[in-house]
Length: 154
Image (cartoon, rainbow, N blue to C red):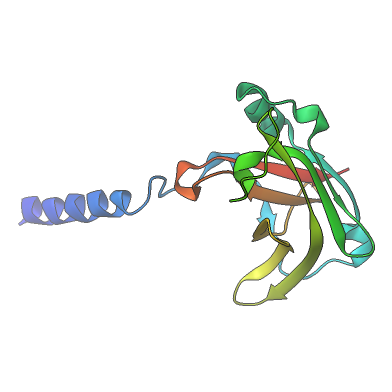
């Protein structure tokens, strides 16, 4: 009886782990908490730079993280500069494997999905916070590959 239960448990566990490449989550965005209430616009507007872990990731992939920046402007426009081209599905990329994205941004919060930020034409991602700093985690490539970068407000 115990052996049968153990076999059933192991089978279920094995099938559960196959349902995603990373069933326990990705390490690149650990420690960030998704906001449940939309912050004041003045708290969102400004310059966002890469987290130290994100800088290391980009360096490992031959990109210069020091020039990678996100700016949310008061007129609801954004500038996303020198980011890896795999952030979006566009074919627009420079010879160095980076691209610049421009558009409008908006935040939406609901009790069923908490707060999300949309960077028009680029991504819709959770709006997060870590150590009292607004943070925007952006997946790079296929989400199952668990690669991404996090922009933190200065």
